[in-house]
Length: 590
Ligand code: ARG
Image (cartoon, rainbow, N blue to C red):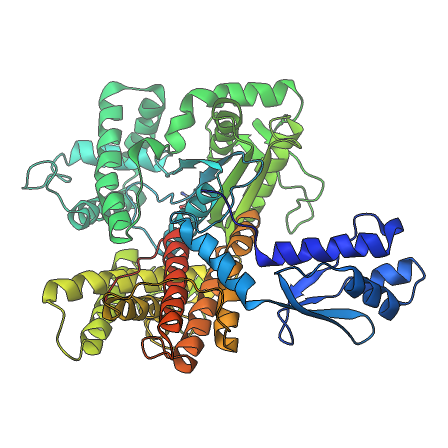
């Protein structure tokens, strides 16, 4: 299906042509077209152009109006103020445009990017043997939305879940398991263990081994020796390490499943996945002079990174004891992503508190020539999830809140809302449970995605599942309400009638639907799902106004009924598509 030229783009073209004709010396001039409240669009570019050409802005504007070709597109164009243009498009142009979009079932006329590249996106990266917390929620939710959005624009997307599956803590865990061999056992057969059970075993083991490590010097020594065995690739040690990883994955997948999110095993390439590259990464950095030895460690220094004492704080690529840390792994991962996976963009959906780390890692990779003008790296840094009190989210006991508990509570609250709304008792218990999950998980995702990622936000379930305001529930209800109208229409099918005169609420809705493609392009270019969320919220609001002002099934003529059903349908499909890109379900009935 062909992509559809938006009304904005068409109007823009007409004006640009007229401008060039009126002021040939300006070359390809931009009329600066915006949506406006006074008319459909306003062009603000003429003032500056006239100034530059030492012409009178009002006269130039009048000349543009005289030269512009209205055709079927423009209903009215007038000069306003010192040289602005107010532009109104025809009703038929709006309906024709939407009809062309509706004909493209999958993409609603949204074009693909002209020059797509390959983005490797690093997101949803929990840590082995550790509980997932709200920070991991943000990375997963934002990352998943960005994956869907980029793919929709035609970008090739490679997903990487850089899980924390390596490090000295495994010496302690493995040694403890050797000394307490039944700690990870469960009574059920393999494959039947729940994520909850897997995690509670791991958690218990983590706590006891930590306690022993802190209190027993001899255990500490044995644990440290175990780290050496692990790094040397000792078979028994590696097998036990694998057990921790597998057990944790059962848990991770159960959480991702709850989040209604597809995470594929081959995309889980954790820190350990780059072990074979670490030596070489260090050699390359040292040989090129990017890294230098300092007090036995291999370090990279930066002019603008200093500690509180004013001394430079280096990025440590290899510690003085020969151990590798987080930086060596990330630098190796960059080499893998650039040279093997052929990425043109590396995207990292990671907490803003790791920004300094990434700044140093990216700069190091640039100095080494692994990143350059053709291959860029971006951290999509996200802020902290706060409690209702505005402080970082903690339980009353001051512990980090378990992600699973939050999700369960969200689903519980949402289920109550769904049950309450089902006043006529039309839904079965099963349906209520299914919708409760879709509404609850949607609410959590939407709250995260609807504020710009770099900002902190308050985790407030009351607000999240509220039916009014900027929530996913509001959007889901708008969608379900449309579906209910379409069902009640029975034999009457939606059909576009470009010959009809439109009400203001119909025009406003139609013009907004037309902007879907432009919103998506902007959302993708800026990795800013909140722009798509804001668009969808406005779409639902404009639909609500339309629904209040314009009777659909009781419209005056059969043609008007069909045309309004058509507006309902194209709105619903835009909502559905947009929500799907955010990873949120749109139930047909609520
Ligand atoms: N596992 C880390 C954490 O829980 C996030 C990993 C981010 N990705 C990376 N390539 N360093 O904080």
